[in-house]
Amino acid sequence: MYYTYVLRSKKDGNFYIGYTENLKKRFKEHNSGKVKSTKYRSPFELVYYEACRNIEDALHREKYLKSTYGHRYLENRLKNDI
Image 1 (cartoon, rainbow, N blue to C red):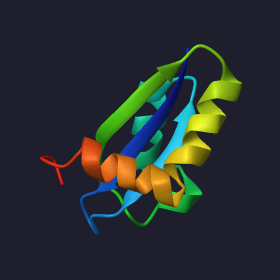
Image 2: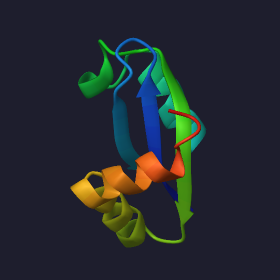
Image 3: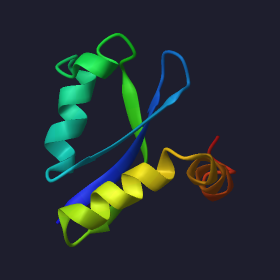
């Protein structure tokens, strides 16, 4: 399985969207500062994820969630959490 996930920085409140094959490991990497793009924004909380059966679907979903329409989808999906 592949996962498309959304993290929220507890430091600045902004989202980070990515994909991975091992969600638990990747989440730990983000929070321990091992990911260059999020190193200075940790700690994070996992606010949303989706499971996909193949990498192509996960990449497609990540690209969508990073788009304007994807941001709107997340705002509506996480309305009570934001």
